[in-house]
Image 1 (tube, one colour):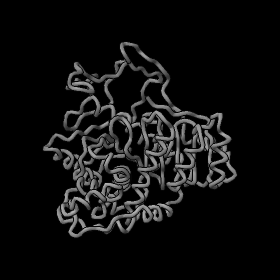
Image 2 (image 1 turned 90 degrees about the horizontal axis):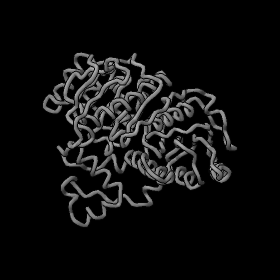
Image 3 (image 1 turned 60 degrees about the horizontal axis):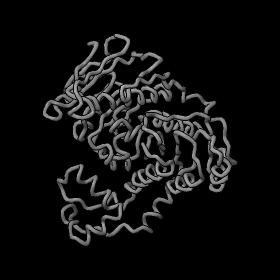
Image 4 (image 1 turned 90 degrees about the vertical axis):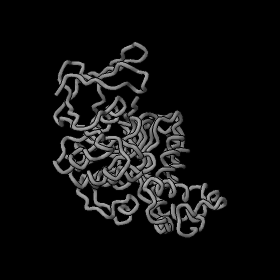
Length: 393
């Protein structure tokens, strides 16, 4: 392993020179097995690797993440999926190992945001996972290792230029980290909070107290995901996977709405009316994804008016009405939402419960905590105050 790696350029082509290295003079903990990863690729790689490593440590399950622009589009554990999820994630024709299941979940929850992602795996990349990645639009992957079959598959992607990075799973960074902004160096201790500690979730402030091992697991998934998401951020989780992430918003309620809309989209894709859309044979995966989003959204009325539905469907699907959508979304239950800082007002709870949220985990500490708790009690939501903030900048 080398002590530094020269890069083509930084965030943008005009930002030269560019390189990565370890401040304490140690060798880099990575090997580039294929391709030529750039500055942003490595930013995604190192943030996503920390996320999946921590999820695996916290739960004991294989974990994967799909990253874009230094925030996760998806993160998930390798928990077996229903046939419906396999279908909406487009993996119903594949054999799935536990780590492949984790990546299919991470990639599939928000497929539009995951387009052109950076993949991260907590475990060795196997053939099954490589076959999923092979047919998706993706920029690269980081994992602690690769089977020979997986490496051969990945090296054939993007005309042989797909970025494949192997990281030393035993690498431990220094406890103090640095960052330069405008020629000024910032220094801080690394965020080493143990988010798997059950005591963090013991302060239930609502009348409802419906905690279970599965609920605590989903709370842990939400907080670990938020730990590596650009702030402000909110994360909706269901059955061990993020189903909606709202990142980098200046207003907390805008995070909640953005993440909630993504969670709604995830659930609406499971509606039989969407599953049975009459797509033309041979339509590209990306076009199919975009068309589903258009059909679920209000834009479909314009498509019908313009007659453009003929570009994608063998026959014209009926409009998915607002009443039909709301009726389907009313069946969405058991969702957990986490927030990287306190909810300042009850409006966040009001929005969250429309997306099936029954459990909330947040730091608490707002001067309006009473209003937030009262709103949660109104809907029978179980809410835990952790007392910890998870800003990531």
